[in-house]
Image 1 (cartoon, helix red, strand yellow):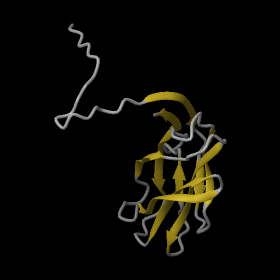
Image 2 (tube, one colour):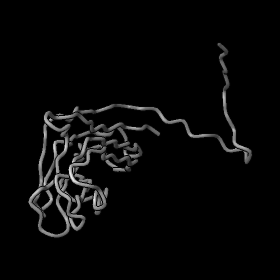
Image 3 (cartoon, helix red, strand yellow):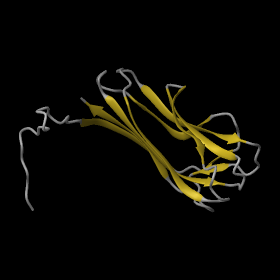
Image 4 (cartoon, helix red, strand yellow):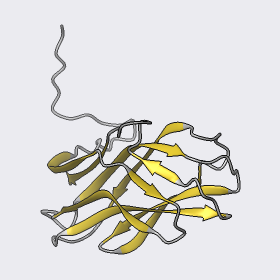
Length: 160
């Protein structure tokens, strides 16, 4: 095996490639089966806090979880939002699963590089709700059928 060692990498225009370092990682394994059929957004198990070490740090957010639609009504769908410190921050998906068949399992996931511009503790959480027409079947997270499947929610501080 060969090793490439360089002092600096430059682009064709003479600028250098940014080199980020991970300052800290917060992660939680998601394993609790969750259900919703409510049109009101509710917090999921995917909730973590991180305290950036610099105001110029970025936070890389990664969420991945098993998902199951428990109905066949294409006029209903799951809605996911990322909350930051208790307020809606970014829409993850406002129309997830509307074309899926009944009891279809899949993965729901999301990535975001956020710039909190603070050194105070910052809490990120995934919220969800049902959208569309009334439906009795609802939706599940961390559901592998008869037993809960797993997922993860991770926050990484990327230093400048």
